[in-house]
Image (cartoon, rainbow, N blue to C red; front, side, top):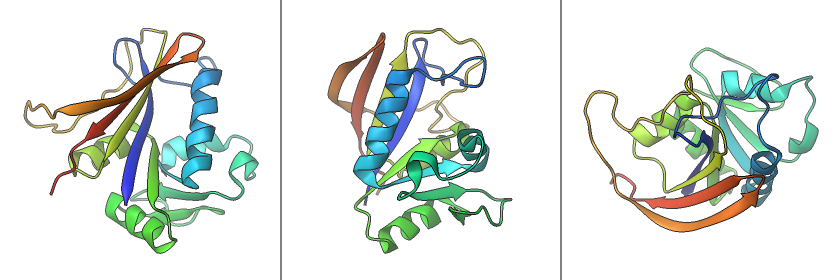
Length: 171
């Protein structure tokens, strides 16, 4: 199964932190909806999912397989809750998906990256600098670098640039 990690980053490389006072860009949201429609699913952490859910209801994700990775949550109506990245991928494979979209939460992103479970990275770089943002970490204990291959780049509008990288998966 192909796995794509999707994230919006600030221009200085930190995760773009969104909230009521700092909403995500329209261009990044539109791209997220396109990616979700193309894959038919997304994997997200519990806290990020709760932030996305807003007032409840399925919204634009009514026919989408949503997988929430959480060590604490037991049941969230309308989604599948799993305990690990591997369990999330196994579930989506069983449902017949060819591609999984990993969409939210620094902890979830770092977990998939740290375990070598990502094939492709999509970074939407927003035209903002953030001092309190979180970072992507592939190894929290040691300095290491992992080469990636630029597959594509394009302007999404509104100053947002999308970078798409291939990443060699751990064997």
